[in-house]
Image (cartoon, rainbow, N blue to C red; front, side, top):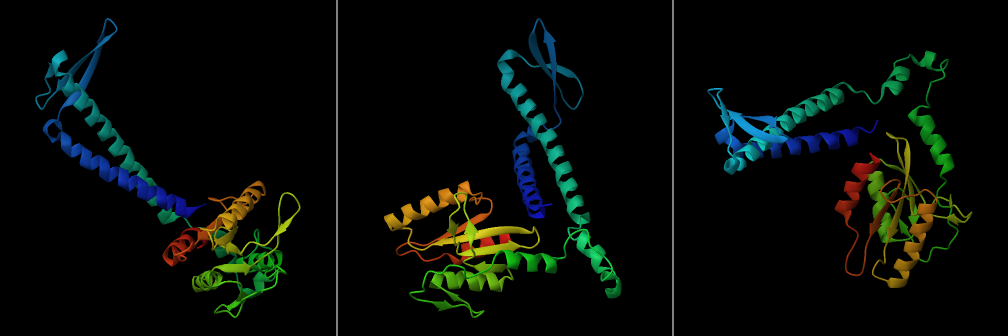
Length: 263
């Protein structure tokens, strides 16, 4: 269950509700009027009921009133549905426990845990397996210059140090330059492999540091095409950051991506 997507949907519903409420204010003069339609000889005729509940015919030259009443009714029905949707999502989020598997295991006494085989790997077990799958520092290309991260790792650029330090700051599990096999059998070394432990999903992060260089950009566009054929897709499990001449790495944007996709 992707709770973040549901939370984002809730915000969309709330924005729509607020917009509809604003629109309905334009119909305050007919708020108690109700549109009624009848069909005669395959033609629609329109009436309305006001506060007196009398049925009043809407003449052809007053069709604008019928349109406004229909639009008001649409907004009213939409508003009711938006309220219902909002409450449904809020109730679900209030009751939903995304850690029920983990909680069931952790509720056991330590001695009993040793006797139990959980239906799903614990986070610690999953992390150990993930680290073994994505071994870091697999790129044998020599360092011309190196930078040391706050965790004592050596990386190839100042921007990669910034990224690694931000991952560490937010507690994101990562490996630097893991080995990945592409669809054509060739090996590549993305800048980082990262684990969203909540979703148990692996992401890859590539930093493009010379985006204004045409040959560099062409090379990396070709890389992205190969990634795509190998199931590593922008908008899904591939994250990129970019800098160009005169434009440094956007730390605020990097932090937003970390919080939205990796936590």
